[in-house]
Structures are given as C-alpha cells and as structure tokens.
Image 1 (cartoon, rainbow, N blue to C red):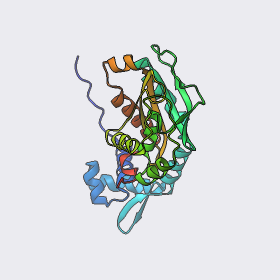
Image 2: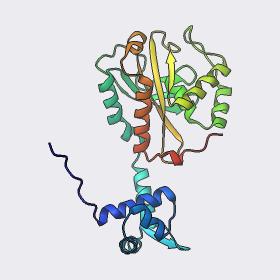
Image 3: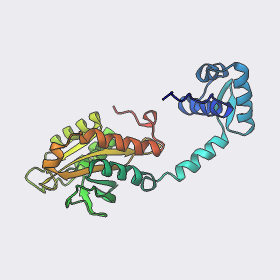
Image 4: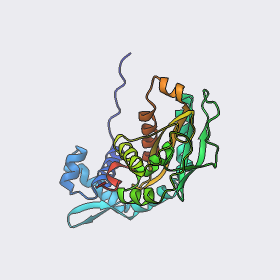
Length: 260
C-alpha cells in the first residue's frame, strides 16, 4: 500500500506553530520565528500581524509574546482541566490493557483518598474501595505522591507521618522511606510489595498539573504472584499513564519546579 503523503501545511498550521513556539519560549523575535517555523519572513509577518490584531500576540521591545486572547483561552482551558474529568478514560485503557485494578488517589491530610477505580478483567478483590483512605508511607500511590513533592515538602511530610504498621512488610523506618521515595523520583514510579495488603503488589506514579505541582497519583494493583509473572513491567506502564494524564492537564517538563 502506498504511504499516504501528509497534507501541505497552511496558514493555520503555521499560526499554531508560532503560538506553540511562544508557549515554550515565552518570547521570540521575528527572525527567531522565521527560523522555528521554516517559512519566509514575509509569511511570518503576515501571520503575526493577524495574530496581533486578534490579540493572540503582542509585540514588546522587538519580541513577540502571547497576548491577552491567548491568556484568556489558556485560563478557560485550565478551569476545565480537572483530574477527575481527564483521568478516567486513560485509566480505563490501562485497566483494559493489563486486566488489573487501576486507581486514582488525591492527597488529604497525611493520606491518599481513592476518587476513581477501574477493575480489570483479571482482578480479584483488592483493597482499593472508592473513597477509601490509604497511608502515604505504606502504599505505592502514597509514595508516588511523596515523590512528586519538592524535596522540602516531602521531608516535612515524611517527618510527621505516624508510620503505622499494617503487615510484616510495612516500612516504618523514615530513612528507608526516604530512600524509597528518592528511587521513585528517579525512575518515575513507586512500588509497594505487601506493605499495606500482604497479598498484593502495587505500582504508582504521580500526576502533575499545569503549574508543575503534584495534584494526584495513580496506581495499579493485583495479586503478587500475577504481578511478578506479568510479561510487561508495570512500573513503566503506570509512569507512562500518569505522564499522559499530566500532559492532558497542561503539564510539561519545563513547568515542573527544579529539584535541588
């Protein structure tokens, strides 16, 4: 079958590219826009003039920036981006793909509260009832949330946790918890091996909003024997899913606060 050729780019495509460049860079000269978009200077001039007239761009000190119309559009988008509105279809796909129980948790006090759950076709009873509260230190969803915090906020939170024992595998040493959270931050997901429910293994990852702040965490859980024997590694899968949700919420790597 012959490969379908991409349609040539029109003025709308070029205008969107200009808006994307300024979204990422913050500001750019006309020459920089010409280089980034790859069209003639005259074509860029026509586009930016139209965008300026509609208040999507503004010119200051020889550099273009996003204008008030773009700001209004961004604010309207943010107001309609709620993790409970965005996450469920993506989490259902993960549950369908893996057959295991997938959950979404939000932070409340020193715990996480499950606000969405999708049970996969392989799932047996897993202790993740909707509305249930889970400790930060003994669950993948809790450790994932901690990993998404700034180091300062994370340390403040870890220092005050009660560190309750739930199973013989529950980690109650704060230094070991700090190590686990640090590992989760580096690799992109947290793990729980029988720490809250002795028979289950869970993987969790943080979800970030448009400001770069952690706003929730997701997890995938199942019986330890089946999770260990799975063909696809669950850690990268849950991290990939959390990243997709974060992207839908307006998050990009450049908005995340720097970790020191």
